Length: 81
Image (cartoon, rainbow, N blue to C red; front, top):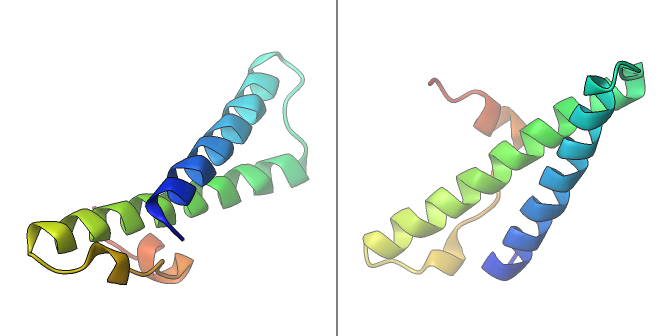
């Protein structure tokens, strides 16, 4: 995924996330499927941000940022904060 595509994908996911939060905030709540989708979006955003951080770290180290790879959800979600 190119950096430009990454930003577009992040923007699309963020817009969907905002729509779901808006729906939840209007008093109608979310269905089980919508809550599951919200969880999926959060994980996917974490993966995308991880990829962007990898690219920046590689560039800072003088390495090819394009060699960064999207890590699995299991790997990214397993990071300790």
